[in-house]
Structures are given as C-alpha cells and as structure tokens.
Amino acid sequence: MKLLRSAAMVLLVLSTPVIPSELSLYQVSYHQLDNGMGVILKQRGDSRNVSIRLGVDVGLEDFSCEKREVPHFLEHLLFTGTSKNGEYELERMLNDRGGFSNASTGRFRTTYETDIHSDYVMYAVGYLYEIMTDSLISEEDVEKSRNIIFRERGGERSELIEFLHEKGLKKSAYSKLAGYINMGCDTLTSPKGVTREDIMRALESFYVPNNMVISIVGMFSEEKVLKTLNSTFGQLYRVEVDHSTRRTANLKVDGPREFVGSLSPILATDATVDILYMVPNRRSSEKYPLQLLESYLQDRIFKKVRIDNGLGYSPDVSFMPLDDIGLFGLSGDVDFDEMKQVQELLQQEIDAISQGDIDEEIFNKTKQYLSLSYDQGYELNASYADYYVSRHYELQNFGILTNESEAIERVMLAQFSNIAQKYLRPENQLIARDYPTLSYHQLFVGIGVLILIAMIIMARYLMRRRRI
Image (tube, rainbow, N blue to C red; front, side):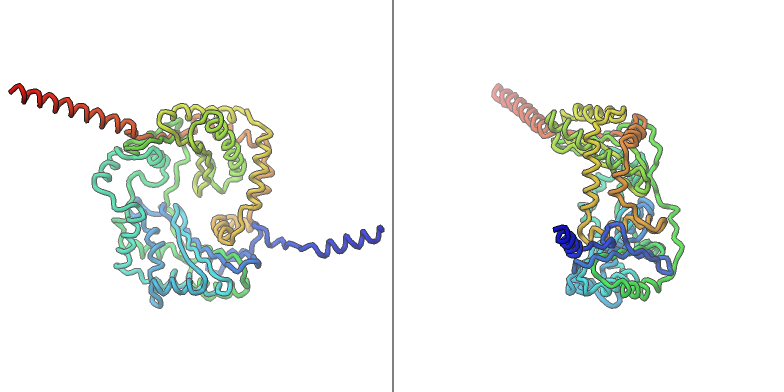
C-alpha cells in the first residue's frame, strides 16, 4: 500500500503542469540597443496576439503653454502618411494582418500602440519604424490635425470664454489648484499657435532612439525581434536630449489652502469637494503604503458617507503617483446643500487615521485585497506592454522590476500609520470646491419670479390703459 501511494505521488508530480517562472509579470528580457534605445521583451506563448508599445520621453510639460499641444500634433501626424504609404494604406497595412494602432499623449510621455497577430510581429516593428522616421507631415496635414485637436477639445473656444478664463472668472477649483502647484498651465491651452516648424523641431529633438523604449509582449521569436530592431531602430543615431525646460510640479505647499471654482459650472445640481495632499512620486518606495492608505480610506469613507449617512453617490479616494509628484485625495460628488456635511465627514476620517486610529482587521484585509489584485491585475498582453513602458526607469536604472505584490505584503501596520501621520497633515492640505453658480431649482425659482414680476407690470399697465 505504501509503495502504491509513493507511485501515485510520482505520477501526480509528473502530470502536474510546470508553470515557467518567465510567465511572472516581473520577469522580462531587457536590452539596450547600441544607440541607447530600451527594449523590453516578454514571452507569453499562449496567445496569438502581440502587443507593442513604443514610448517616447516627451509630453505636454516639455513645451511652453503657447506651444503645449506640439506633442499632441505629432501623436496625430505620424499616422498621416510616409513617402511609401498614405494614411489609408498605413491603416490597411495593419488591419489586413489583424492589427490596429493608436497613440496617446501625457504630461511626460507619448505612447504609440500597436496590436497585431503573432505571425506579423516583425511587420509591426517595421510599421512603427516607418512612421517614426519617414512621416511627411505636410502643412495640409498640420491643419487637418489642428481641426481634429479642436474637435477633441469640444471646439474652438470663443473670445468671451478666453477673456473670462484670463480674468479668473470661469475657472474650476481644480484648475486653480493645478495652477498653484505648477501642474499644467494657468491659461487655456490651444493648438492655435502651433506651427509646422515647431512640430518638426520637436520631432528632431525628441524622437531619437536614446529617448525611446519599446515593449513587446506575446508569442514571438526573441532572436528575430532583436535582429529586426537592430536593423531598423538600431540604425538611428543617438542625439542628446534636453529636458531642462520641462515643467514639474511645485512640491512645497503652504497649506491649508482652499480653491473655489468661479462660474464653473454655471448651471448644475451637483457640487464636488476634494481634499488633496502632496505625496511622493511614483518612483518612491513609500507608494506602497500610500496605495494601502488609498484602499483603506476608500472602505472607511464609503461606509461613513454613503452607507451610514446616505450622502453622495460615489465618495472616492485616489492616489495618483506621477513622474514628478504624487497627489492623494478624498472627494465627494454631492448635492450642493450637502457639500459642507460631506467635507466634515471626510475630514473626520482623515483626522482619525492621522492620529493612529486604525482598524487592524481592515488593514490586513486591505493588504490581502491589494496583493491579490496585483497577482491577477495584468492578464492582457496590452496591459503587460503598457505596464512595462511605464516602469522602464526601473529596468534602466536597476535592471529588475519590483514585485509589487510582495512590496505590499511587506508593509507593516506601524509603517502604514507613520505614512498617514507624515502626509495627512493640515499644512499639507489643499481643498478644491466646485459648486454651480445657479442650481436648476434656483433657475426655475428665478424664472418664476421674473414671470410674476412681468405679469404684475403687465397688469398695472393694462389697469392704467383702462383708466385712460
């Protein structure tokens, strides 16, 4: 019987599939081409889809407010045609091979996305190389892109709106707060003043190999991909990149400070209140206890604001670790007359946790939730590819990616409490409140009053006419 059990155990071990460690999110093949271009490769042999992300280290904050839309123009223009293929032909090149492309522009990075069938990976690399190095960018295409960017922004703003914004008469509270911490522009940005010369200068200055990283995830031959990359992007010359004019947020907050929107919105029923704190950027090791703090407080304010008091539809806590700073905020979207009460409830939870009043059971459950979320959070090749581009700095500087699930597990209650006390301080607090100039109720009451006044005036006028 003992021998049979041993034989059964051997069979069980032999029949159990071995999951290679390479399938781990944090284990990748990282390379640098001779010209400095970063290459992140991730083999996932169980999928016919391959996701490619090409990140260029340039964004809105690399340009003055008048020229802020320059990288946005490039995001559109690189798809409008090369010396070999027009815009329609470029699109068909991918579509006919089960692929598609897109792009997005952020504060510090522009990302080009391509997903394609695994049989055509080298083709997709060639496609990206072609649009990066051979796009024609005509004056006509620039004007077409200008119109598209205007449409994306809801149309060209009127001179009245620009005047009101310039005088501070139509600004959201968040816009005022962003201006205070130097995050974005205090004035309205527009594609109006961008020229083709601005765009071409940016293309030459920033779209260089040592300012790029490419991430490829899916089923492919690593040897063939590296060979193709070396014969395409590897032939580009390294150019020194100047980011000295890049705007970064102001880390010093002289708080507490309150920002109130003006004529923003003019007419609505809802109001919003945000309580914000400046915290470290996404490269800091303190981001893990801050992520725990975000989930812990989310549970607390949902119970207090929504469940216990029936206020607000979706009270929220958000931790936004950016490249230059981090923002940690609690917010409520409520009826105007409930704003003050919700703000007080949010403040009560902030005061409690910053004074060490922490429910250890909820803390442990929050750790478990976040750790499991990391383990299951990246299933699509596209999610992997996006993730690797955003974490390139770790591979570039340390050669490995931090296992974020394990990093969350290592956060202890004392560290969690210290982080809350360190950052949720009154002098680090920024409050943004937006409420309508007029609610619909006030509008209807006002219209009713005006109608009543008009009726009284008309009645008096008719009475005078009769006496005459």
